[in-house]
Amino acid sequence: MNETSLDMSVTTGQLQAPVVPWRRWLLAFDAYNATTNLAFTSAIWVIYLAAHGYSPLAIGLFETLFHVAKFVAEIPTGVFADLLGRRKSLIVYCLICIVETLLLLVPTLPLLILSFMLAGIAFAFRGGADNALLWTLAGYADPERQETRYSKLVSRMFLISLVGEVVGTSCGGYLGSILQVLPFVCRASMMALAIVPLLFLPEQKAGPTQEKHITRPRPIQHLLQGVRAVWSSPALLGLLLISGLTEGCWQTIYFYYQLYLHGLGFALSSIGLIVAVSMGCNFLFTALAPWIMRLLPERRLVPLCVGMQVAGLLLMSLPFSPLLSVFGYLVPFQAALAILGSAMSTYINVRSPEEQRATVLSFQTGVFSAAMIVLFPLFGLGISNVSYSTVYLWTLITLSVGSIAIGVLVWRLKKTRRSGAQAM
Image 1: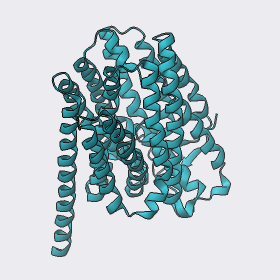
Image 2: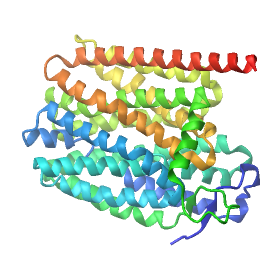
Image 3: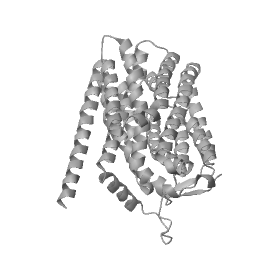
């Protein structure tokens, strides 16, 4: 086990890559990333619950419970990762995931409620910790070009995640056709295995090492510093909001897309393969993301990706052509998701203070959870009463109006700050 502790008070310019085994650390991070993303259950869990008598609305409420628990736990776990260790946070994530996955083997209402709550808390421990850890490793790997190196590493992280998801999703549908509970057992086993590479990573703690007299963390002060950092940067605030909104729209559609395909008559194994194809498209655009980020500036790339997501939703809302709907999901929708994932992570990390990095990143996943709390049950209620195409159109309107509102908010804040600076 690696007990090395990365000195988070060191500036980027002071990092010296040769003195630390950063290549070994990156390989360990990749192993953890690949193992935790073997998503054996992602293509079948909605159908699994539906087969046990739970309606789309009930499934939506379960997912809402997940995001409520995640939303409540986001900020405390972000502070935990910064002050007590980002590796510790990821280990706790794996341990809780093992428990919540095994609880799904007995799909009674009380155990499902407990499982979804634990899952939300688990993902809160992961939110922000992995990206914050990777950002610092990027600084050790290439201290002079940390931002550029991170954009490549985070794209690699997403690519490895997608490979794991494609393999896990494809196998999950097949495993589910053999024995319904087998995907859940396999996922729990992989989460246990993922702890091993984490033990080879250095622990990361943020904090001013020069203040030796401070013997205990100050979580409230740490949180307030993170809030001030976000509020003082309108661009950072806008990125956090738009990231949560776009990710929330995609995640909602992704889960219910399983039921949409199931309603068209596809078998479990076929649904797993179709979802895997979408991940393959995502893989391609994720690989292109660093090149696209170098080609287009931030002020153009973010609106372009939001526009592609809107275009994908528009095609999916066409009631007369299932093929166009599938194309909209597989191409423009996946392209927007893949490019935004790498771009948002990089842009937010660049603007985040080092000592509050995991806390600020937890704000990002917290906004996503808040969006899911609203979107997921409404989507489930909608498809219980109207067609999928109509609900896709409603989602398009929500994304468009929300994005415009965020843009106006950022513009007004920047204008107010400029006016205040000129007055002084």
